[in-house]
Length: 500
Image 1 (cartoon, rainbow, N blue to C red):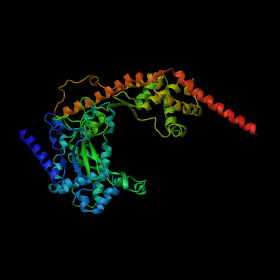
Image 2 (cartoon, rainbow, N blue to C red):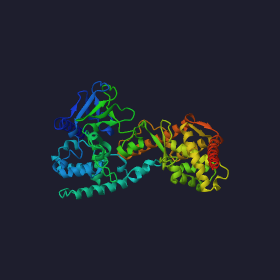
Image 3 (cartoon, one colour):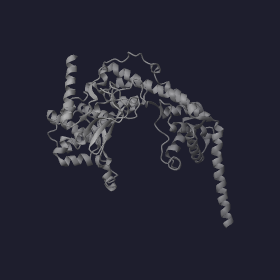
Image 4 (cartoon, helix red, strand yellow):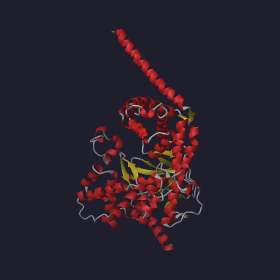
């Protein structure tokens, strides 16, 4: 163990020597890079050795010292290949190809070799691409199981292989699936979208050229890049105290809060729940992410509608189809914004997807009409045109009907029943095994607890966030719209007769 740790320290020092000498990286004397002193799962981290004031610069790296499709050996050696990366390939494919070239072709001769030596190895990575089917099953019933993206990764792998072939890199050894997944996972977890310093100077016509095709790296205004030192910061949605900023010449990590000496410097990867942190980056926040949420599938919402409203699945499907596919509602009322989604989010801060509440409101009101299931499609469509608009206004005013609240609460209850009982309890403090299989199981349980908490908080917040009214009150408003429209039509007809 001691030898291995010493080897890691040597790699860290070699990286710092390379970064500060070859790459001209400036690092403040107030911070240091080292292995985490108590948590091996965090790997390397950046610690403050002295107090750091908000706004202080932590480190700075020149734009030409980051690794991307413009700075790689492949682009520098061949200007035509550089143009291809910038104008033909996507961000992901281009960056993956140039990294593979450095790793497989240049190897120890690569400018970036000391940097690669501090990248995580495959054996230590826990993003969901590395989980077995049995391990993924431990995440049931979370919707993250359907977002792992293995099919998309396979398609990108084929694209990368085809790109290598088209570039006529005959000396490029075959890239295995395992090598591709490793590089792609590192890119997903650690890359930054570096803004182009000259992007605002581009002519709009040049930016929008060939809009029918895929957007090129050049058109996008940023370049996906690996940024030495910036990717050494761990992330925490609650403790973020640093942020990467851009100048015309360099990238600068700046303290966005006061940092006490001895504390860790944290970045943030984005406003992600624990499920996405695990999928993308291979870790969870044990106390829960600030942005945790759970998903209620549409099928669960429909099931609750049937149970609460005593109606057939056919009439609900008919209502959803009219909302989703008839232009009179989709385009004229919703203005192209979708209301019928595959799933709806409930957040740990108690916020609920307004689309879900609105849909529950629409169906609840519609099915309280006399003989609703026997209405003609024309009559149902005309009613929905008025109701959808009123329902949106009502929800936006934090006002819903009692039946709508009952439907949504029933959907929440159905969803919570799908979660195992242990996810409703806090785990003991010593329940984090260090071996990979056990560690993944505990992370899966943490994700499920985060989602359960989000559902519970959303359930508690519903009746405090929304004022509940009788359903007849909203139906009367919809009928009043119809009476007003009928009156206006009659006045128009009368006016025409008088002119005659």
